Image (tube, rainbow, N blue to C red):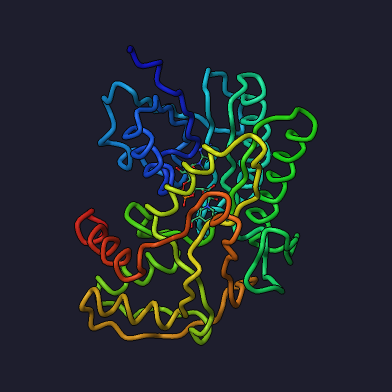
Length: 317
Ligand SMILES: NC(=O)c1ccc[n+]([C@@H]2O[C@H](COP(=O)([O-])OP(=O)(O)OC[C@H]3O[C@@H](n4cnc5c(N)ncnc54)[C@H](O)[C@@H]3O)[C@@H](O)[C@H]2O)c1
C-alpha cells in the first residue's frame, strides 16, 4: 500500500539549539519540515547538514509578523533563550513571545494544526516551592531585567489557553527546564557553555555567588524525545507539562565535572550573583512521567562529555 503524504511540520526558531535538534528528529521520522527563523540567536550552520534535503525548507522569517503556510503541526520555539540574547533587545523579546504566539496560534486556527509552545521554567520565577509542580503559579518580578522573557512566556501561555477555551484548539504547552548539549552557542552566557568554554581555553571558571545554588540539567536528546511525545498526545492533553531532569547539581559540582572531563587546569573564581537569579530550581516531572511515559535518562557526565566534544571540534575555541 502506498504511504500517505508526509506530515508537514513548522518549527519556529528551528535554527536554534533545540530547534535544530528537533528538525533532525522530525526529518528522521519522515516529516516534511519547514523552519521559520530570523537568525537572531540561531544560525544557518545548525541546519547546514539538512540543506538540500527534499523534505526540508528554511525560511528567514520573524514570527512577530504573520506567516501564511499550510501545515499539520507547529512547534513554536522562536525566542532567544539565554539572558545575553533576550536582554539585548527586551522589547523585541516580549514581542517575539506575545506577537509570535498570536501569529502562530492564528496560523494553527486557520489550518487546524496542532500547536506546541516551548514555555520555560522561568514562568516560576524565583520559586517559593520546591520542586515546582505545574500547579505552582510562580514568583515572578514583572519589572526586572529578566521580565521580558519570563512575562513574555507567561503571556504566551495565557494566549495558548485562551485560544483553547475560545476556539477549542489542540494546544500543548511544555515548560522546559535547563537543557544543554551540542549546538549551544559558546558565547550565550549559559552556565554549561560558559564553564566548558572557560575550561577548554584554560581560563578561570566564573562561579556566580558561592556556587551552592543548584540546577537540574537535561540532555538535549531526552528533551527532543519529550517534545515529540507531547505533540503525539490526544487533543485533550494540553499541559502545561514540566520537562527537565530531576537530578540536582550545585554549580560547584558542575564545574568540577567540566574540569575533569576537559582535563583543564582552570581554577574557580567567584563573582556576585546576577539579579533575580533563582537559588534553586528543579522540576516535578510526575506529569511528564504519567502522561508521556517519559523521564530524562542521559547521565550528566555522558551528556557533558558529548557537549565538550562538540565545543572542541566545532571551531568554537
Ligand atoms: N535551552 C533551554 O534550556 C530552554 C529552557 C527553557 C525554554 N526554552 C525555550 O525553547 C526555545 C528554544 O530555545 P533554544 O535554547 O533553542 O534557544 P536559541 O536561542 O538557540 O533558539 C531560539 C531560536 O529562535 C529564533 N528567533 C528568535 N526570535 C525570533 C523571531 N522573532 N522570529 C523568528 N525566529 C526567532 C532564534 O534565531 C533562534 O534560532 C525557546 O523558546 C526557549 O525559550 C529553552
